Length: 156
Image (cartoon, rainbow, N blue to C red; front, side, top):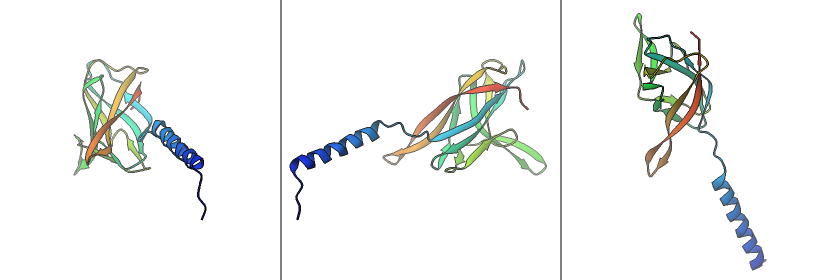
């Protein structure tokens, strides 16, 4: 039977503590990646527009809310056919399966910005905050937020 010296044990313990401290201060990966984000430019008098992007979550998540200082109201919407009519409505959440791209695009899921503070001109940027419950603390979902500047574009 081999016994380790107390110096060896102290050194090993110090390495474990150092590794734990480094892991605690490491920058965690973003829970969601947003690619190709853009907001449709508006014309004078227009009070609403859409924001579009592709979201990819690192773990199963839900998009549960959106906010921006550019609009009084920001909601996740879906458009779908009901009979012969295309309908748009707000939804309480949008599932983001792990490692699967979810496209927010014209004619499908998108972010609706309503009661705009001012017209949005091409070339401007809009801060957009996405709310996601990405951690459970004592069995209660913790709402995190993910913010990025989104460019305004003249697109259809």
